[in-house]
Image (cartoon, rainbow, N blue to C red; front, side, top):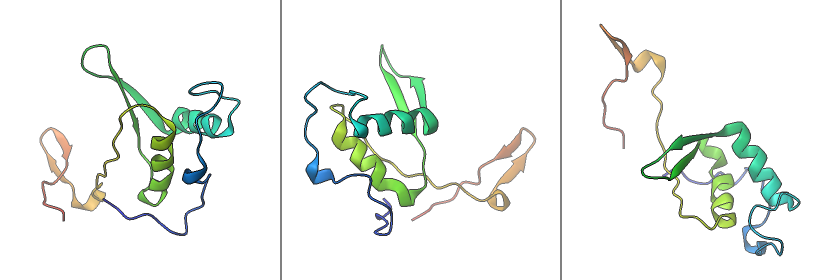
Length: 106
Protein backbone atom coordinates (compact mmCIF):
# COMPACT_ATOMS: atom_id res chain seq x y z
CA UNK A 1 0.00 0.00 0.00
CA UNK A 2 1.30 3.43 -0.83
CA UNK A 3 2.17 5.90 1.84
CA UNK A 4 0.20 9.05 2.52
CA UNK A 5 1.60 12.20 0.90
CA UNK A 6 2.19 14.64 3.80
CA UNK A 7 2.08 17.54 1.33
CA UNK A 8 -1.44 16.64 0.13
CA UNK A 9 -4.08 19.18 1.14
CA UNK A 10 -6.39 18.19 3.98
CA UNK A 11 -10.08 18.44 3.16
CA UNK A 12 -11.18 18.19 6.77
CA UNK A 13 -9.84 16.76 10.00
CA UNK A 14 -10.76 13.10 10.41
CA UNK A 15 -10.63 13.43 14.20
CA UNK A 16 -13.25 16.19 14.08
CA UNK A 17 -15.81 14.04 12.26
CA UNK A 18 -19.11 13.65 14.07
CA UNK A 19 -22.24 11.89 12.95
CA UNK A 20 -24.50 14.35 11.14
CA UNK A 21 -27.69 15.12 12.99
CA UNK A 22 -29.87 14.92 9.86
CA UNK A 23 -28.67 11.48 8.73
CA UNK A 24 -26.28 9.78 6.38
CA UNK A 25 -25.38 11.54 3.14
CA UNK A 26 -27.13 14.81 3.97
CA UNK A 27 -25.89 17.00 1.10
CA UNK A 28 -26.30 20.15 3.18
CA UNK A 29 -23.29 18.87 5.14
CA UNK A 30 -20.21 20.06 3.18
CA UNK A 31 -18.36 16.80 3.82
CA UNK A 32 -21.06 14.69 2.20
CA UNK A 33 -21.61 17.22 -0.59
CA UNK A 34 -17.89 17.02 -1.45
CA UNK A 35 -17.92 13.22 -1.34
CA UNK A 36 -21.05 13.07 -3.53
CA UNK A 37 -19.50 15.34 -6.17
CA UNK A 38 -16.20 13.48 -6.03
CA UNK A 39 -17.87 10.11 -6.60
CA UNK A 40 -19.98 11.56 -9.42
CA UNK A 41 -16.83 12.76 -11.18
CA UNK A 42 -14.34 9.96 -10.43
CA UNK A 43 -16.48 6.99 -9.41
CA UNK A 44 -17.87 3.96 -11.22
CA UNK A 45 -20.87 1.87 -10.15
CA UNK A 46 -21.15 -1.76 -11.20
CA UNK A 47 -23.36 -4.72 -10.29
CA UNK A 48 -22.12 -6.98 -7.54
CA UNK A 49 -23.30 -10.42 -6.41
CA UNK A 50 -26.98 -10.62 -5.46
CA UNK A 51 -28.58 -7.21 -5.16
CA UNK A 52 -25.36 -5.54 -4.12
CA UNK A 53 -23.55 -2.85 -6.05
CA UNK A 54 -19.90 -1.93 -6.17
CA UNK A 55 -18.48 1.57 -6.17
CA UNK A 56 -14.96 2.01 -7.50
CA UNK A 57 -12.95 5.21 -7.46
CA UNK A 58 -9.57 5.46 -9.11
CA UNK A 59 -7.31 8.32 -8.13
CA UNK A 60 -3.62 9.07 -7.89
CA UNK A 61 -1.94 7.39 -4.93
CA UNK A 62 -0.88 10.76 -3.52
CA UNK A 63 -4.58 11.47 -2.86
CA UNK A 64 -5.21 8.32 -0.82
CA UNK A 65 -6.04 10.41 2.25
CA UNK A 66 -9.24 11.52 0.52
CA UNK A 67 -10.45 7.92 0.31
CA UNK A 68 -9.53 7.29 3.94
CA UNK A 69 -11.60 10.31 4.97
CA UNK A 70 -14.52 9.00 2.91
CA UNK A 71 -14.23 5.67 4.75
CA UNK A 72 -14.74 7.53 8.02
CA UNK A 73 -17.91 9.16 6.65
CA UNK A 74 -19.64 6.02 5.40
CA UNK A 75 -21.32 3.36 7.52
CA UNK A 76 -20.46 0.62 4.99
CA UNK A 77 -17.51 -1.75 4.89
CA UNK A 78 -15.00 -0.64 2.30
CA UNK A 79 -11.44 -1.30 1.29
CA UNK A 80 -8.73 0.69 -0.41
CA UNK A 81 -6.53 -1.24 -2.78
CA UNK A 82 -3.71 -0.20 -5.03
CA UNK A 83 -3.01 -1.26 -8.57
CA UNK A 84 -0.04 -0.50 -10.75
CA UNK A 85 -0.56 0.59 -14.32
CA UNK A 86 2.27 -0.42 -16.58
CA UNK A 87 3.53 2.16 -19.06
CA UNK A 88 2.54 1.51 -22.66
CA UNK A 89 6.12 0.53 -23.51
CA UNK A 90 6.02 -2.40 -21.05
CA UNK A 91 2.85 -3.89 -22.53
CA UNK A 92 2.98 -6.81 -24.95
CA UNK A 93 0.87 -7.09 -28.05
CA UNK A 94 -0.67 -10.32 -29.28
CA UNK A 95 -2.99 -11.45 -32.08
CA UNK A 96 -5.95 -10.27 -30.03
CA UNK A 97 -4.60 -6.78 -29.38
CA UNK A 98 -2.69 -5.25 -26.47
CA UNK A 99 -2.29 -7.22 -23.27
CA UNK A 100 -0.57 -6.43 -20.01
CA UNK A 101 2.82 -8.01 -19.52
CA UNK A 102 2.69 -10.40 -16.56
CA UNK A 103 5.31 -9.35 -14.03
CA UNK A 104 5.76 -9.58 -10.30
CA UNK A 105 5.81 -6.14 -8.66
CA UNK A 106 7.02 -5.69 -5.07
